[in-house]
Each structure stands twice: as C-alpha cells, then as structure tokens.
Image 1 (cartoon, rainbow over the protein chains, first blue to last red):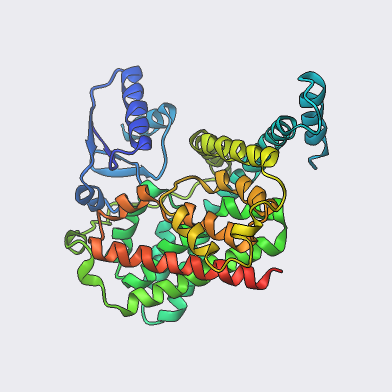
Image 2: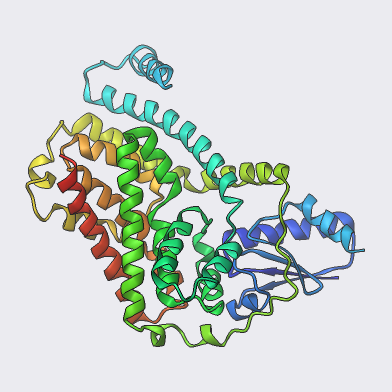
Amino acid sequence: MEIKILGSGCANCKKLEANAREAIAEMGIDASITKVEDIKEVMKYGVMRTPGFVIDEKVKSYGKVLSAAEIKKLIQAQD
Amino acid sequence: MFTWTQNLADWLIYSVFNIAKDSKLGSALNFFVYDTIKIFILLFLIIYAITFIRSFFPPEKTRKILANKKGHTFLAHILAALLGIVTPFCSCSAVPLFIGFVEAGIPLGVTFSYLVAAPMVNEVALGLLYSLFGLKIALIYIASGEIIAIISGLILGKLGLEKYVEGYVYEIEIDNDGLEIPIPTLNERLRDAWVFTLDLIKKIWIYVVIGIAIGGFMHGWIPKDALAKYAGKNNPFAVLVAVLFGIPLYSNAAGVIPLVSELTRAGVAMGTALAFMMAVTALSIPEMILLRKVLKPKLLVIFVTIVGCGIIFTGYMFNFIIS
C-alpha cells in the first residue's frame, strides 16, 4: 500500500504524517509513506486544501488532519 | 454575561494579591485577568460556531460557483468577496487555492477579490468586535472589508496583470477525475469543528495573551486620552502612520482586538485603531512569502499597495462617520 501526504511542509502536514506513521505501525501493515511537497505535484491531485491524504493514488481526504484512528478506518476500508 | 469575570478579577487582584485598587499595577493586572478570561471564553464560542457554519462552504464549492459566473464580472466580484468571509482559508492553503481558482478559469481580478476578503474580513475578529463593541462597529468592519475586496479586485482585474503570475501556475493541469468531495455528517461537522477550535486556539493563544498584556499595560500606565494629541481625529496623518506601522507586524486578529479597545480609550480615533488592526491582520510578511510563490514581485507589490491604500481609505472613512 502506498500512502502519500500532500502539502508544502506546513505544521498540519507534519502532524498528519506522524499520525499516518502511528496508524500503520499499530496495524503492523506494510505501507510506504511519501510526502509530496512540490506544489505542482500536489495540484495534480486537484486538492485545494492541504494536507491531502492519498492511498494508492486516490485522494481520501484533504484540508484536515486525520487522527490515527481515522486513518486506520480508511486503510481498513481499502481492503 | 461577564459580571462574574469582573468580580473574580477584583477578588483575585485586590483581595488575594492585596494590590491597591487605584494603583497602576492593580488596574493593569485586573484588566489582564478580566480580559484574558473573557476573550478566551468568547474565542471558544465564536470559533466553534463559525467553524461549524463554514463546513458548509468548502473552497471546492466556492470555486464551482465562481467558475460558473465567468460572464458576470461585477457579480462575480461581489460573490467572491462574500464567499471570502465564509470559506475557510488557512494561510498555508493560499497557494493551492490560488492555483485551483486560476485553473478553473476564474479571472485573476475575481480571485483577488476573494484573496483580499478572506483575511480582511476575519470572522473571528467580526465575532469579537460584535461582542465587545456592538453591532455598528462590526457592520462597518464587514462592509469596509467587502468594499475594499470588491474594488481592489476590480482594479487588479482591469490592469491585465496575468503576465505577472508565475508561469508554472498556468501549466499545471489538474486531474480532477479521481477526486470525490466527501460530505460530512452532522456529527462529523460538530466533531471537526471542535478539533479545529482547539487547534486554532493552541496556535493563536500566545498572540492573544501578548495583545492583552500590552492592553493591560496601557490600561494601567497610559492615562485616558493621552494619545489623543498624536493619534486623535485631528491628526490627518494618524491613519497613514498606523497602517504603515501595522503592515510589518503580524498577529492574529484575536490578539489585536484587546489592543483596539485600549487604543481607543487612550484617545486614538476608532477608525485609526481599526485600520491598524486590518493592516496587522490582512497584510503580513508570512502571507506575502507564501503569495510570492505564485505572484511575481511586481504583482505582489501592486497587491499590497492596493490593499494598503484601501485600508487607509477606510480608516479615514470610519473617522469621518463615527463621531
């Protein structure tokens, strides 16, 4: 599973990344987390509010710092 | 609503700490305790209510509405300025928002009407102004912010400045097909609003406390009307100086408002104090650094100049209206 965090390095993006790492660590699954900071790349996903949260190239949430619990739910819904 | 806060502050400062009631220190500390409790209670209520309301106006919706109004320039400017009040706008989203609007074919001038209105008519400031100074001041604040946004957007649109937007903005192609706009349930809206409120207060509390501390100092040591000579209505340069002074300063609106009330008590004209607040909140160096990513320096300077002139103009207008 490939998770991407979209955002230009603001505080909320870092928080979201930390929550995502916490979620996958607790679930013990094999997933990569990449941060997409280049604004051109971020915009390709059509997101106007950062941070954006992407699983396998699909935008799952944006403009919001998801909690670790919310991220777990999104990952589970994926399977 | 806040009599108990005053009683609490009186008891704490005059009885517990035993500081003389008419001393400068006592009056300053009393102001600090009273205002801190009161402003934070108001902030919680206002931010929570506003965040909930705003969850119904996401930028994606705003963009759609504005993109459909392409032929109606003036109407689009008014709409953009109005949506600037309700559409959530975090400064770290300024760049993606700008690109998203331009990409959707929204004219540059209309985009600017939105970009000016969003920080200028700050909804937290609006709520605080209403609670502390009454409806009239709140309405003047909102009306002047909207008018500045509409007019500066119209002017910027007429100047044909598209070439001063960074080139890559026009090259980005948004692949929007995969994007679903989630519609939150009522419960999610309420919970998200709560999370956001806590987050925002965590972010701005220090500005608020500093603002109240300076206000408290003024309350104790600067006598009533002491500044009237320098910044009262009779000094024609007061507004100009207040705005130039306010632009490089950066604070959240919630941090400036406790100062506004103290500045007016010390004799600064209301319009001058409000112009100062708008300059501090609407034009700031962090925001300019962000906007620089999409605007070439020349356009950034034009943007700041037009908004700055707008604020100066409303400062004078306020002073003229309120007597």
